[in-house]
Length: 370
Image 1 (cartoon, rainbow, N blue to C red):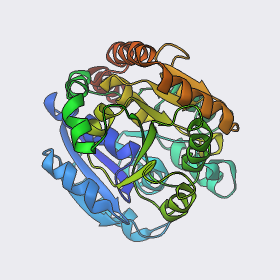
Image 2: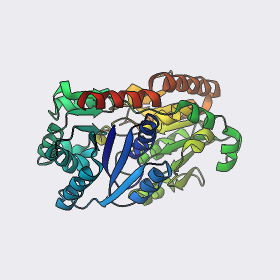
Image 3: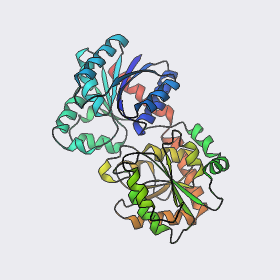
Image 4: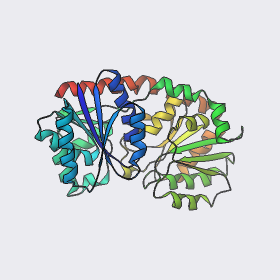
């Protein structure tokens, strides 16, 4: 089987990391995979990792929201590669890749990775609905997204399949076992309680909420330290906010291509996304669980599908920094509870969100359309 994947990329976020796991997994199962990247911004980071993983990759400029050149380029790529399935990811790829594949009579799959606000507004909702209507099957990466797709009429329920993100549990667990070396790399003192946040620094990811909560939590837990992995347009704003805290309380690491060592060094990982962002899954939360670290997450969108309250982590109110502060201070005060939740999260990641399960369920969707 040949499968052409298409996605616009401007860096390496959750959907890109998902593809960096899924595509090699498909290759291992004798699927001939090719990736077409509609490139914008820092797409070269994604392209380099794809090629390093042995994925044949074609790069074309993303261009504007409606780009006849991209549509033409995809027509040419489909004719050259002659795939059995075209699999598009995110709205930009849907809008250009789905009609191109339909025109050439190739079966089509679309993955919805998030519930961005533009799906609510015209003309974007109309365009999204028209693009997904062309797909033979739509993959939702969480039950939350499956329900949202139905509510917004983006696709009929009979065409939607839930395929959660998956991780290589053994690989992440092995990284988690390197705690001492990772903490030395981070320069963390033995008595420091380290909290990581790993995401692009953009509106809705909760960095400001975390800084405000940390300011409160430090009154009860002065050994707390936060490590911010990622960059983005709000980085300077968040840095200014962090200057109100004691020196070295928050450390900015910039873009971290491999967060496994950072999660291994830390005592917990925080995922304070806001409901407006429409987080489709929360891959960093799953990766933290696979490493064996408890997750403190806001109780919004898909995150309660991952984090079991009080068992694998803590769920907090996204509108209440005091609630997040209590969770941070509580985790800092109880190392045994941290360890217990970390082990439970690791078991859950292995049992419910394995890489093999993700690949096999994706193949099953291909089997339905090809």
